[in-house]
Length: 245
Image (cartoon, rainbow, N blue to C red; front, side, top):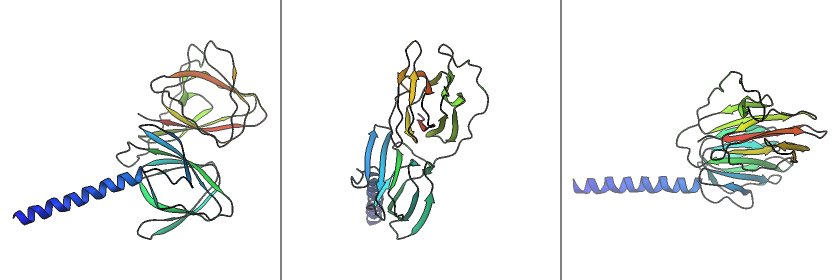
């Protein structure tokens, strides 16, 4: 009986060590040759993944993540057991991925670049949520702003229990309503545009958009209100990734 108990404890310890190792790998420092940390806090890590033509990554792990393709993706993925798969995505697409350990190869003759947001606290598989319908009764003014997801230029295109993705487009000459951001968000710029922003009671301020740039704005602890205007000649396009608490 004592021998059986000892074996049981040993088996449990090995399993625990294996689980810890997998978790550590999923949250380990990225390979600097193929990924750059753009932002990190206790909740998320934002990576810029870049691969040259036909370049491969080292075997690496991810926690649950949302990805946005800045360029066309044509890749081969290899899992630790040797299983391979290929996939193709166009530029400016988004995808959700559960935790994974893999190697990625760029099959194209052109460079590849993505932004990937890893969710450190994700404890279960992502479950899609249907965005709530309904129009806001707010006027969209400085004193009566609409919620960002109800502003006419902001469209919810994906949501689960961890993240909400807003597709934001303003054509030249268009101006949004005043709207309120109440969550931390990661804006991923998909186009170059000449923009201005205005907060209530303040003057307009230049806010140029550069394709491929990514940032972080804290809105959970410090909600903010503003409106934006496209004063240039090119379309403004951004995916605003809201981090749900």
